[in-house]
Image 1 (tube, rainbow, N blue to C red):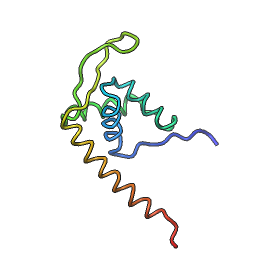
Image 2 (spheres, rainbow, N blue to C red):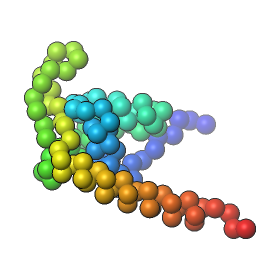
Image 3 (tube, rainbow, N blue to C red):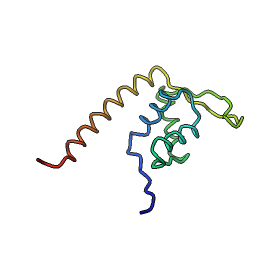
Length: 112
C-alpha cells in the first residue's frame, strides 16, 4: 500500500500550531511544519500554502506574535511565539477537540 498522507481536518491546524508553540517555544514556519511531520510519523505534510495562511490568521487573532530572528542555518526568518491570548485559546480548543474525539470514539465503537 502506498504511503497515505492525512488531510488536516478543518480547524485542527490552528490547534496543532498552538500546541507546538506551547510545547517547544518560539519557532519559524518551516520548523513548525517539520515538527508536525515528525510527530505524525510523516503522515502530515504541510505546504506553505496551508501553514502560512494559518500563521497569519493566528497572528491576526492575537494568538501568536511574530518576531524576526535567525534560523539554524543563519537565514532571516519570522519566529512565532504563543501569546497569553493564544494560551487561553489553546485550552479552549483542546477541550473542544477532546469532547469531539470522545464523541467519535463512542460512535465508532461496535454495538454490544
